[in-house]
Image 1 (cartoon, rainbow over the protein chains, first blue to last red):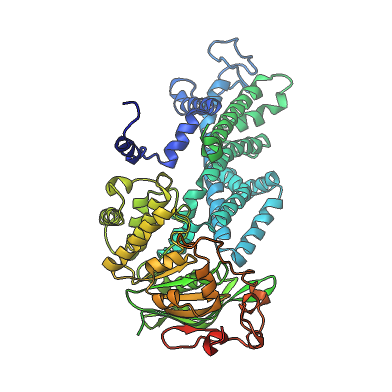
Image 2 (cartoon, helix red, strand yellow; image 1 turned 120 degrees about the horizontal axis):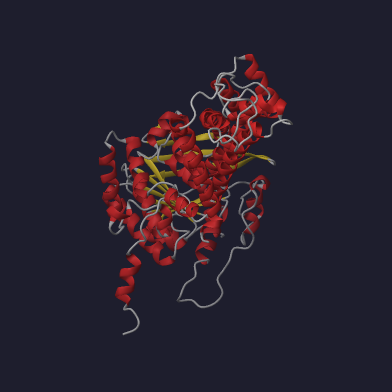
Length: 299
Length: 321
């Protein structure tokens, strides 16, 4: 008998496909995205290098170890050469990566924290709350971000924390707007009314009903914010506003920029490190964006 | 003493045409364990009635300007938001029209039912989960323990509506409001859901306030029927009386719209549409569409009159329509 019997067909239909949580489905989509996976691998390599690299190589990155402006590839001991004071550039890269990534991550957390809280309150409650919070958001949006961050860093003594906070304080408005838009959209959906109909309170509806459904674009935004924050930190350090006691990629560029015409390598290698990191983070962000986009899922 | 009394409820909405009256003195009573069907066309105020009872009309733009909603003699229009939260889900629960969109897509259905239980009962998460599985089993979901771990998108429309019903009855509410619970479902599934609602009502002892525009649903479910038109109740009575001997020309029109296998020929229709609420005039709001309308109908608003089977129509009251 070729055709399956009706009973067999019923049996087959009744067996539900294995439950796949939205998170797992997104990961399955992400894995198929080759550039995004490359970005993830690059980022993992960078993180491992800055976490464990100093155990095997380097030492104090501020220590003067050789003649200044030794070009890369000449002395095997210092494969990337030395800077204007004779400090080891590879040691600086390995030691400076940690603070750079940490500031980027911390700034992204602060950005998302402020942005999501205010955006959620504005979008959910609407009315005067929305008006007030959005005017505040606009106030922060019209300030030139870099100048504002410079003011904040100079007001308080520059340290990794103040830099991270300064970056967070100037970059949350976009996240707030994105969160607000998502909340405005989702709060009208029937399952939010249904949650209210079973007696859930506002806080619960905001954080356990709406926020998880708003998560995909926010996760993408958070990832990209890490990249932006790393660039921001580099920019501040380049302008001489970084923490002078902590090695970071931005500080290396900033310290060596005056001699860029005499020696290209002290600024190029930290620059490449920043570029690679931000590039990897952006690839991951794009990959997450595609993974969470239902329109691209069936492909 | 009825379980739920909606008394001369008046609800307005602020629109760009000014404040329009969505409900104009709606009075309904729901007795314990009975089913009251509220019928009418789109835009006649059925859903606003349901949402007002739940305290879920968006304010602003909505506003309850008069009347009362009494649940066990407690006026819900004056209850605090905290009090309403405690009542919602526990004493009055609601089933929505669209099972496809009324479940949260990122949580499993078991989690969502357990959540409803945890909101009102002091039990452990495990106990709530077990209760959720038992409820899913009760509403006829096969292999409930497995399906409790499914996400809403993995279930069919009928299954999701069963989940919604399980969630609504999870705390054994006394009043269950069903807002067109079968409109989005296949006809065969509709019949199953009606059967389920009838069973649930018998087992859980809930009174059901069902909003519908489907006269077939009324004959399946209703003990009593209230017909609404343009924000007012225009006829009310026992289901058999209203269905077999409709008195208001509008109700007769609605019943004339039911397709029947016995009678060939074109379906009757009611000419025109429900007038926009901001354009309602002095007289009977149905006068413009009514074959029997006379001078009086356009001059004055008829009021609901009668003993058991009440109607708001001069013609029906005086015997000329």
